[in-house]
Length: 133
Image: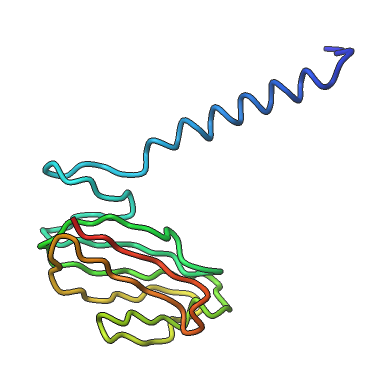
């Protein structure tokens, strides 16, 4: 196909890519028993598991989880060589160096609704927050 104006192809490509990106925007959380939780939260055998990736910061930066459930934060690293591997969670009195690659499970006692749990790197450059509802 010989197109005289390549800008038309570029515009079509941008529209298609934009539609794909926007279609994923509404999939940030799911409902469990009427409580909205983030998509990085799973309920396994009655226990809540929150997965957070650490490399060049923390992802996701904001998580909404269920209050009143025993919880584990699973920190996942994959070739991380920055300060995000030096994790501090002040309210849990947690301070550890994560492996450059691997998973670390951090037990979190059941939290009350409205509690905000914050994790950050030892330098304070990167952070994440878990909101319990």
